[in-house]
Image (tube, rainbow, N blue to C red; front, side, top):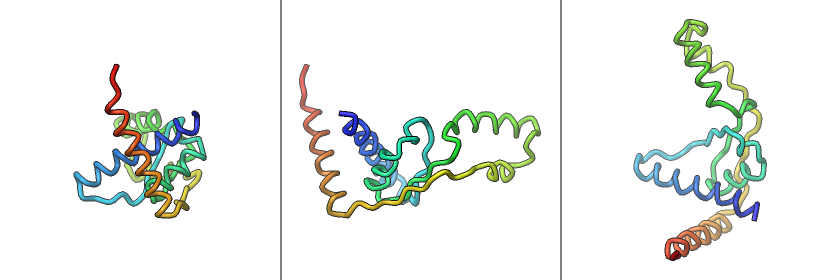
Length: 123
């Protein structure tokens, strides 16, 4: 059950990114992640595999709070520029895809079938 829950996060992310790419015409080059779930190595590797793209995790995974603090620092003059802030980003780990195209396609088809079935459930 836990594995299915983690995999569903990756599949849902793939669905969202696919829609974004379709709407924008821009292909994702790499995915920068943060938050508590990003600390799960299995999930991050599976995400890289499903997306067939690099997933990058920073050392500080609580970047929402960090971003708010950095914006406050810019507004008050504590930081001189956005470039100065870029130097504070430190990479922890990069996950590279290693799933075969055949397996990826098979997994995505199973996911899409499960989503379609769930749409037909009744109370």
